Image (cartoon, rainbow, N blue to C red; front, side):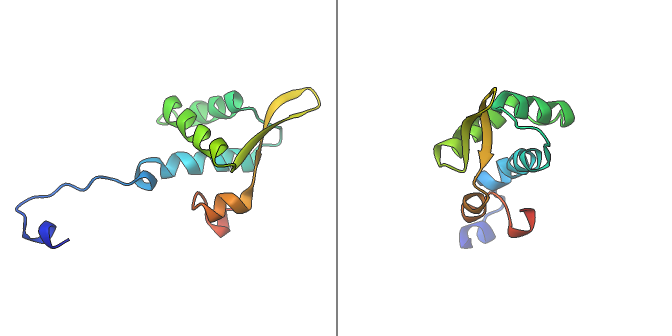
Length: 102
């Protein structure tokens, strides 16, 4: 911090939340608002269709992280294979969403 104040210029490197916070919000909003069970492919397709500025590769990377840490799981329900399910408490505890988002 002191160095930044003394420097003639500085550049802040955004943290992960600044880089991907909006994409996480898009993912969780889509999962929360969907009336149908979504697969990862459908979820990402819905998001990129309604939010052209979002990047498919970023969304895929974030989904892998969410699945790896157990926030999002995939299950077979009826004829739907790999339907996505969210552990909302884990999403909140991991800082992906706020209490008001649930």
